[in-house]
Length: 278
Ligand code: NAP
Image (cartoon, rainbow, N blue to C red; front, top):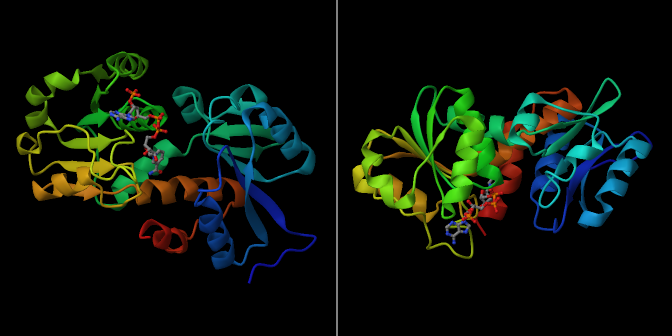
């Protein structure tokens, strides 16, 4: 059972909305698995109160925070420093203390890579198509370029793909020009929100018969885990990686930053899996 006493350390997530977050279940299960006297709470913080929330964190000595929509960029001017990943991605999902300084990190990029590696996909040097150009795509493109990948970005709004590609030395490709690229791919990532519940029948337009069956497909959407995108990729013989791995590993990296302990990955995964099967 969770013990809360005068020694309990506090971490949490700030979002607006935030009540859908799986992070409290995931992190509290991790604290329990390791017998740590820590607790993780969700705080619904509207955008105009973010500065007060961060000041409160400083004053109360809150050990760490996650940030979700709409705070990932707005928090940056409120911090003392950023990790290289957060600075390059331009978004922060984890606050932690380092030598008395309040730092911002982005664990989505490394979490994405760890999820691939855990599924025995090493993307180093691969030619990869990233679908989408929002916040999650930014972390994915950063992660893949760090691994020496040749990255192509396609997005409904082409101008956003162009801007993202320019920022990371990738190439933007119009959706109508994908056919020539598909046979050359080693991997495809869906970082759009297409396919997310309740819109489970939608999927980005990929002519899977043109993609080599030796390629891999990863979907960042995790509700449901088996998206239409992954079902179609699997039907054409591709190896598939669902969004749960990235969700768990971005959380595990934050956990490690805060506590200094290796994260209990299976306990974290087990704690949230039932919520994704509802
Ligand atoms: P975002 O910043 O709002 O970006 C959404 C992206 O989806 C944009 O590229 C947008 O295209 C595209 N899109 C949305 N609706 C579309 C439609 N009807 N047709 C075509 N494209 C559409 O969101 P985000 O934060 O990047 O998140 C994207 C997805 O990744 C979400 O499902 C989120 O849950 C998931 N995610 C998962 C993890 C994980 O740990 N597994 C982590 C982060 C995010 P436009 O630019 O044209 O609007």
